[in-house]
Length: 266
Image (cartoon, helix red, strand yellow):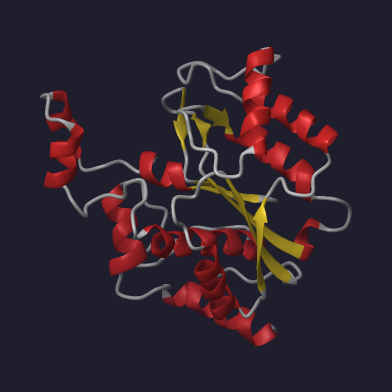
């Protein structure tokens, strides 16, 4: 049984990076506050009010974090000037879209942490960054880098692009794609069975991922084995949609007890 073992954060701070394609952070924050009784704050663009010199430094860090070959062990290298310039332009554009770049998740997380962790205990705030950029981690079994939806630490990262790309679509979707069916035909045939960019269900689905970030902060374990619980770590799109929208309950009895303890202590 997990118990809350750290000081309860004073706030849940929600930051954004890039074009979030209609994600409603205000509604998401209201949900988190309702479930935890911890005040939530929508802080806006992660880069606002950051000095220019600091932004120049983080552009270099992002350039170093690029995964150039997902099939090889990642080794950070000095970025090319053009890569740093690209990252600097991306930082300056609040609604920058994605261009298929995969970043090494740990390095990306460290770069963001340098922006927002400025003295004091990291436990004072639960920080969640919602980004449209794609990050990944090394899968030890395959030896390849795989895109992820989220990385939980201080701060927490959640990728809306990862939510579309990382959980697998139905197996026969890929078979039919190999047989030559167009993406448009497949999207029509499998409508509703997976999330796509700009999906109206995105805000609802991300409630569970944001709650995982909070559970990581409180007890060190963000996931649940119960497929009906919003904390279930789904690897297939249909599993994600079930646990977030069609489960028997929002949270399993074990995690509901933890959340009840949290609300009582507020």
